[in-house]
Image (tube, rainbow, N blue to C red; front, side):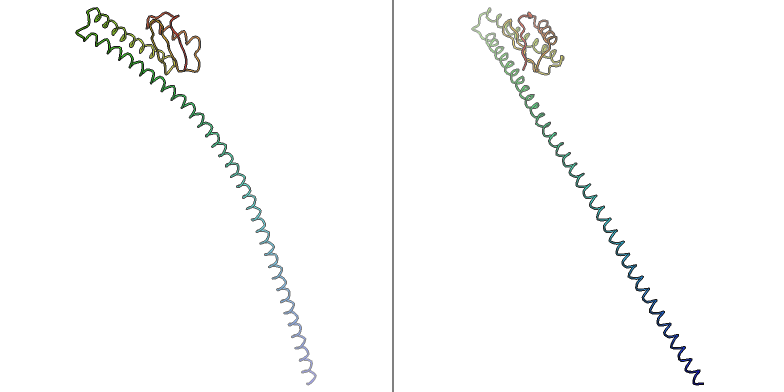
Amino acid sequence: MKLFKKNQIIIYVIVLMLMTAGYLNYTTNTEKQSVETSMQMEANDDMQLADIGDATLVNSNDVMSENTTNTMGDASMVSSQNETTEEDKTIETNSNDANDYFVKSKLERDTMYSQMIETYEKVLNSSNSLETQKQSATQEIQKINDAKNSIMICENLIKTKGFENSIIFVNGDSISIIIEAQEIKQEEVAQIQNIIAREMKAAIENIHIATK
């Protein structure tokens, strides 16, 4: 009876030892797997961070490159626009100067004609004027008005030939025409001369053309 109990105690001890060993082995394996899993996750996280960092760097470089290109492009456009603007301003200034010249010259010419007509009208209205003086004054007024009409017609016809601004001066038989142009072709000179000769009854050799 005592032997049986002793053997039973030994069996319990062995079973308990086996259970303890199994538990310790399971715990060790579990911790090992946990550590490995944790290390693997950390490694994966590091790889992901590395990938994200590289992608951001590449994108940043692309953006910087793109922005630099755009900036350089914008700078070129601004420079080109500035050059174009300066050129346009120069052309506009020259054009304005030419327009001012023709406007001013026509005003002075018309003022001169108005003063001449006013002088002849004073002769007509004066009681001290002789009849011959009045007849002469009447003829001169008619000549001035005819010249003004002919000049207006010629300048308008010259405009139809593509010359925006022109002015005609009459000095006796000599007629001078100033055209706003860099240059005039020979056929254009002939066209202008024909207009002046026809409308103002002038000889070709008395027609002088200049450019401004």
